[in-house]
Image (spheres, rainbow, N blue to C red):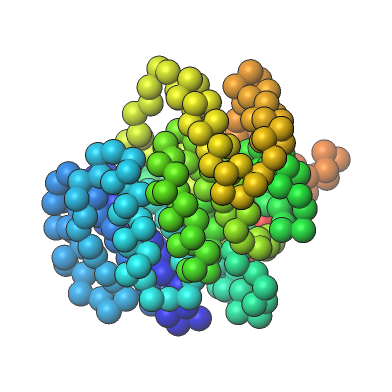
Length: 308
């Protein structure tokens, strides 16, 4: 799988994670592109010490607004020369075994454009990790189902294909549309998923490809008017989907109402989606074990690959 995939890492300050990320996510067969839109040079000062052929670092203008962030990603994609791309935040972790399984499928199935395994959530405490009872999974998402059905599956339980492994050309098309639409970050994850499922053929792979941290040191500040801006940006996205892809307005309104019902009113976003039989004592024991068992990252990856 050498030189098959580039891990695109957008940087925006948070340099406290970068060194740890490199140590825990380096794979000699992968390429890495660090797109740094930070205010300071702290990330550069870390990465300049790594003289590796599969590392590319690029400094971009400080992306203190959403448009600059989108421009940074679009420019980065043009610099990537591998057939597949996967985005990763610098406070999360990739799972090599799952990614390699997905790459093998993509190479064997030329009709596929993006694939993903499960995204598992982890919590860090005193340099150890706990595997929490929560994940994004994508068993029911696929191109053969209609747009509304796929969106309902994405919404309940909440999941998005942001961290999937994409063919580069489809990845570029998705981000070109995000930039053209002037999409706002409030609804970007969902709009990204909508565009990805319209433009590409998605396939779920039974594995774990991504470990997402639930308690990073720093997070993006959120406005008190989140709900208002979120709905406003969603409606703008719907208009774009209708104009560019002829998605029915009535269908788009139904999808928005479905989302509002599940997450704005009922407050159940990121609901547990571990679909295990309640009477399966082995699975119950595994849940209890994961709740209290501390892992270092390598042991966590091994446990995930052997059991989940």
